[in-house]
Length: 143
Image (cartoon, rainbow, N blue to C red; front, side, top):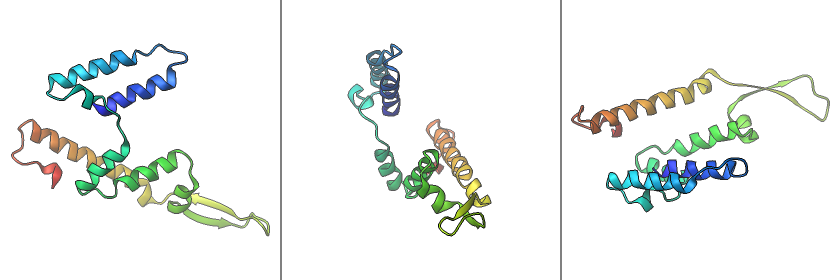
């Protein structure tokens, strides 16, 4: 719920100058949905931060989640630390005495890393859903 509320706030900030997004209405609807489910409206629409997610993931034994997210974010935003730290580097004989030309390539392992992590997360999500739906007697998503 907090993620959806934050998404609505982000949409409003990004589009307010050319689109009339009814932020108050969206937050009010989210609060009403939360209250029907026994969650306080103020809690459901409170600010969402990714660091709170990492705190919960670390407590659940997913210590690497923050690094994975930051690495993916580094690639998405073109940060050199991500590409220079993870990609395979090959020095090419094209530079002059003062410059080096590098070819950066992905390894098969890194190409599959995030795909496999995503599949694992989906599997855990489905196991959790089955448990909550009463289709499993134990919560396989946490062990």
